[in-house]
Image (cartoon, rainbow, N blue to C red; front, side, top):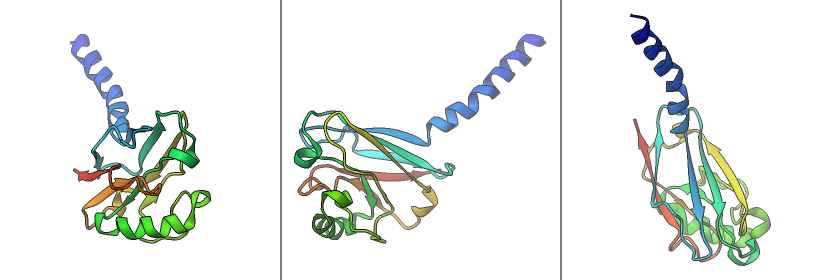
Length: 148
């Protein structure tokens, strides 16, 4: 009787850790202008979701910088155009752009950054993630899937 109770207690203590790990994802961008993921699943049950971006290349951010921007696919071109005007100091995202759900800072080779957002903001999808460094979004993009 004690052994099954001990096992149940152990499993119940492990559950919060397992659930917490589903509220973040590790994303990598390379000097070859590629992300390692083409889709990210975001659980509706998360109060906050974090994307940890690591630039696995060696080139500096002014040459081959990467960020991650979350928005509707239809808004990507406009966000890119406005972001190019905003420049690297603004992380290639126009200040106050309401089309942007969230975005990270631009990082160069060997650097990392994170961005967190409330999954409740993903109401009427679809949504995408992409790099807004000039010219990158054509290749560096993927789908955000809101899951139960």
